[in-house]
Image (tube, rainbow, N blue to C red):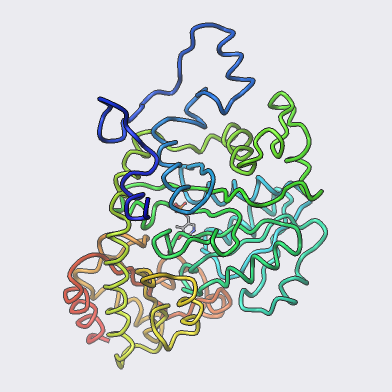
Length: 420
Ligand SMILES: *Cc1c(COP(=O)(O)O)cnc(C)c1O
């Protein structure tokens, strides 16, 4: 199947007389004929369903759809993007380990890495993603177990050189995790460029209607965990009757281990109802994403020529530092988020308040255009100096371009800029 077809059909193949649309299996548990049958399920937990804290047929259909779209071998859904990020790290790192991360990542990810994982004894080593390969390689230590980056960084819009990161990670004997939330498989499939694990906040374009929070982890099935660095993959797991993930589940050891250990113990699994809604949204992702890109390109071009705007950050603009990388890694569009700098904190607030159609929301990637001025909202506790250290200028405004008629969006932005 071509991708456009997979968005509609992958993951659920109804048989003769089955429901046309993905059935919602709203059940916490599954029933068996005998205690022997249940014992067999515990011996071979991937062969049948046990409990909806970590496996459910509706959710699994959507997992299989996203795995197919990313070109992976298996996927696991989570109840948020944050849950996907934390599980992707905890599946590789334990207390006393470290991992290398691009410094250009989502704010929630920075907090998770710098504060919460630190409390668990896992150290994050930040690197400048644009640094040369030797400098990136020098950041690794003996206890480093993973490398992490974002395809298109939220909110800086920096585009990751995925092949470079993959080369450095693989030379150090660790897998590369890529958060591809802003790209979606419509624009980029990081596995094709060497990523080993792809994660998503499905709350963004995959959902696309501001309906529900969710996440996904996809396993490329290519990384060799038998290189001596990952004993949890190669030695018997006593909590599961001594299974050895690289031996017993050689096709997708990463995702099976994440599901059987972390999802079992933490239980951040979506409900069947949530998976059903996500599947419905995924059916139109290819079509929606193309319109988001088309509209954002026009908005970015309008803003680039405007007197009240100091800087426009959008991968589709030739003037943007990351345009060459964007052309290499993104296909057929440059996503729907445009960041601008309108000068200072006061102008940022006034611009945001003057908008009529474009909504003020702590969200991106919705069908409705929305806007956020970090300095007066999510980052309001920071001084101008602290903001700059976090890579955010006081006048930075993040515009998430929706699916409305682009002339209406531009008209609203234009009248708000006039008031500055
Ligand atoms: C929103 C976001 C997350 C976190 O996802 P939630 O679904 O909000 O938990 C992670 N990464 C990126 C790039 C995001 O935009």
